[in-house]
Amino acid sequence: MHLELIRLEKIFAPSILTKIDDPLLAQYQIELWMKRDDLLHPIISGNKWRKLKYIIDHALSLGADTLISMGGAYSNHLHALAYAGKVLGLKTIGLVRGEQPETLTPTLQDMKNWGMELEFVSRSDYRLLRQYKEWQAPHQFPADLRHAHRPWRSPRQYWIPEGGAQTLALKGVAELVDEIEIQYDTLCIPCGTGTTLAGIIEAVPQQVSVLGFAAFKNAGYITAEVDALLSQSRKDWQINLDYHFGGFAKTNAELSAFIEDFEVKTTIPLDPVYTGKMMYAIYDLIQKHYFKPGQRIIAVHTGGLQGKRGFG
Image 1 (cartoon, rainbow, N blue to C red):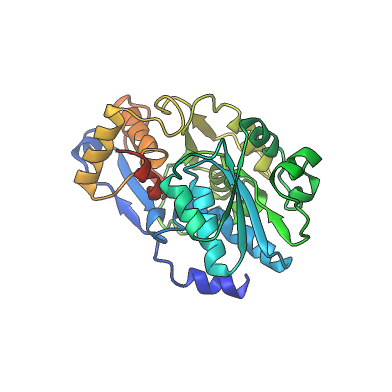
Image 2: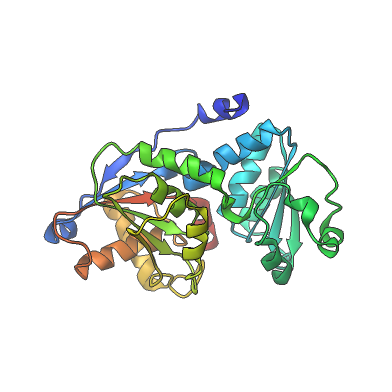
């Protein structure tokens, strides 16, 4: 791995495994643990770093000086990329979905402060960009898209798909699984692009089932996206589509109350976009007897706590 990345990772904190102590879990004879990837770093936390680590290493090995990617106005992925670029001395460009708001979100303001060039693209162009997966993609963008946003002429630009959805990301995610030193039955993970889910499926022991929780509506297509990333097929995994709470970054009083109660009981902060929804789902499924008594479940906290600033 590139020397600059090794130096950066040396300042990271351990991602500990914490047992959740809750009478309700004892009542249903379920043992629940949390993999605290939110503790890795105050900014590049959780699966954001896991996915970016070897992608950026590849970019550095090619001599790239600019990292380009895409995301929404509250994107954890772009937020982490902007900070990593600042620390590593790399230029960053974020293609942001939708029109530029009159006032930048706290996430976008951070990215701008860290030197990321923000380019706001129409939703139709954004959908078009999703098809580009290879690092050379900026040189393949249609002429009207290139003209609309920037010349895309530098040969040292490196494209990272939405959410870091490429096979190199799986290598970093696998390291998360390698750090789990206890036996377990099910590993749970919140899903955006499905990249972290794919990395976990590839890395867990064969006897372990993997359960993803979609963070937005109409997410059934993620299954195909995950399949495309996997080097071999496995049957013991699925994506639950029932706990999106109305859509991406949508919430309600019930979810907010659950997150507040969970934080009081455990002192573990949750974000309402990803990990909060997953933990609500796990508790709900436990009470519906979805998991067999005696099972040990590990839930991955994917960080992204900066996103809480968008909620009251």
